[in-house]
Each structure stands twice: as structure tokens, then as C-alpha cells.
Length: 135
Image 1 (tube, rainbow, N blue to C red):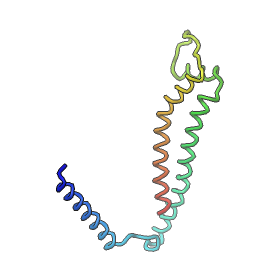
Image 2 (tube, helix red, strand yellow):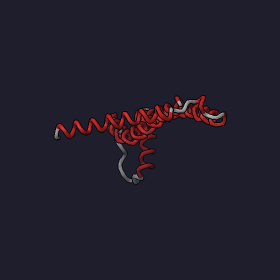
Image 3 (tube, helix red, strand yellow):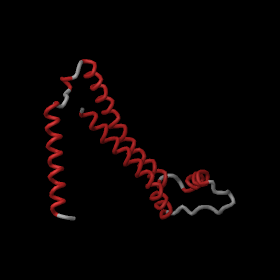
């Protein structure tokens, strides 16, 4: 990329950041004391609910991980096979599944993809609720 172009972009970005800071200084950032009484009560309620939701999202991600771990590594092979046959709609005429430690680990990794996405979404929600709880 052209060096002068990069320098111009940096100058525009600096100018934009400067203008944003000046705008916030001009209008002022609202605080809890600047709200009217009903608005302050509503903000306190939102902060209280956000603190609860922060812990619920964190515990939900831990529970999701534990459920997947326990499903693949704690349930006996016969019960896990019956569960997998029901979920995967495997015909009863097929031979028995060999659920060794390797096949359980592969199953854990496959279901771990969806569980990982769920945990990432819950942790993003956790960060959002943490920001709400701080005001």
C-alpha cells in the first residue's frame, strides 16, 4: 500500500477519534445521579438483573460442558448405545456399536463443536451482561 495513503488514513482516524471525544465532552456522559428518580430506579433494576444473568450465563456454559463430558465418558456403554441408536435412528438389525475410549473421544469432539459454539455465545452474553451490570 502507498505510504502516503496509510498516513492519510491514520490522520483521518485520529481526527475522527478526536471529534468523538470532543462530542462526549460537549454533551457530557450521563451518570446515575443525572437521571430522574424513575430512570435511576430502572437503571438499578437493569443492573440487578444483569448481575443475575451474568452468573446464569457462566453457569450455563459450565453445565453445557459438563453434560457433554458426562454423556460421553460417564454413561455405561449399553445405555449410551441405546441412546445413540434412538437419536441416530439406527435400525435394530445393525450390529452392536463398539464404544471404546477412542470412539467416545471422537463422539465428544464431534459434539464439542456445537457445544463450543454454545459456550462462546454464552460467554459473549456474559460479557454483555457484565457491561450492563457496571452501568
